[in-house]
Image 1 (cartoon, one colour):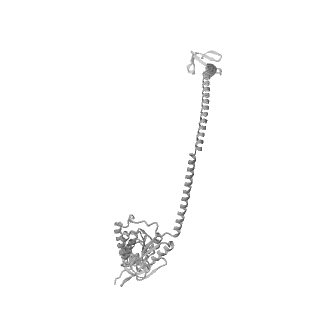
Image 2 (image 1 turned 120 degrees about the vertical axis):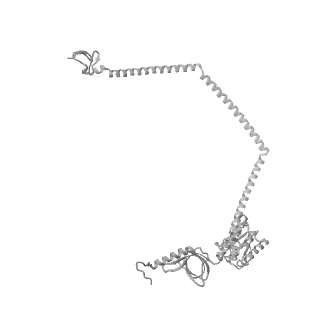
Image 3 (image 1 turned 30 degrees about the horizontal axis):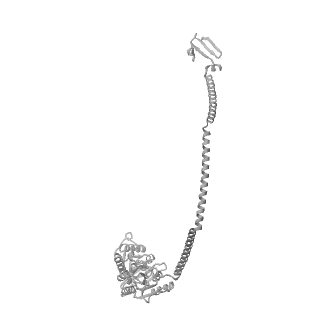
Amino acid sequence: MFNASPANRNIFTVSKLNHLARSILESEIGQVWLSAEISNFIAASSGHWYFTLKDNRAQIKSAMFKGANRKVNIRPKEGDKVLVRANLSIYEPRGDYQLVVEHLEPEGEGQLKRQFEELKRTLSAQGLFANENKQALPLNIACIGVITSATGAALHDILTVLKRRNPSVEVVIYPTQVQGISASQQICRAIEIANQRREVDVLIVGRGGGSLEDLWCFNEENVAWAIHYSVLPIVSAVGHEVDITIADFVADLRAPTPSAAAELVSQSQIEMLSTLTAKRDRLFKSTKTRIKEFQYQQLSLTQELNGYHPRNQLRQYMQRVDNQLTAISHNITTRLMWAKQANETRVAKLQQFSPRKLLTEQQRHHSLLSQRLEKAWLSAFEQRQQQLANSSHLLDTVSPLATLARGYSITFKDKDVVKSRVELAKGDVITTRFEDGEAKSTVI
């Protein structure tokens, strides 16, 4: 036996072991595709799905959470064969080995989807889906052709809607199989017969909802070409709103359901009555407008005819003569007034250039100039007097005599001003000038 000391043993807890096993499974194996049968299916109130995937030898527990199962179109049930994409994992609290499913589809549906996409690419490249190849629905549809199963719910829905909206519209049914091996051939034959008879204005081709296999006849290439070559406009109405088929792409118009197709190709009685009422109102308004136009034309013609009556012509000439006489009189009066104004203007100009007036103006001008000259001379004289007084005052202010008048004196030596005692020597004769005279002195 293997004996290891407690210090060398790598001891796990159960939760740590389960976590390690989960990490190894998720990292080493990761995502797988699995073909299996469903059993023990449970849809929890939380929205998650729990079920078992099995074959004839083994089984594994699986979970598909609501974020992923929300994308699945059909709800699985016991015994369904499915193809899943899942991640291998372990539910750690119980140590359960399980799959976490990310994608689920009925087994075989994947192959059909690949065929659908391949045919879609091919027909699109050949121009069958181009808008320029699509026809517009007629404005007035009196007869509608329906290509579908005579016993299906789709026909009942279409007829119910048409009866409710417009019971007067005619319906021609071209019964065909809409599921199974020969369904596509019957649909093509029904389209061909409808185009040969030309008894309807538009065709509705479709059926009720179902799985991808149930709707597959509308994904056949022969049906696509039959719709493309149809002279009659075709509305595709296959399955529910989420169901998309090749016929939808090729048809002139796609309806989400058979009932919606009946709505599209029919006009309700209420709408028709509203349209007729609107047309009646427009006709009444148009007629009323035309009557008013005719009345206006009649009035205009009557007025024009009255204009050519001799009496009216004579009145026109009389009025024209009166207008001309008035104009002549006005013209003469205006000319006389202009002549009078011109004469007054000339007299005014002669008076303006009269020698007496000019002499008077010159005398007044001479008087003004004399007054201005006298005023200017007096002003200049006063300015010069003021300047002289200012200068005298300034001269008196800076004069030495003014200094002497304030009690100061000036000492001279040989007519030079003595500014310092060092300039004097014993025996020098100096002269001192006062305001009122001079005094001579000898320096001791």
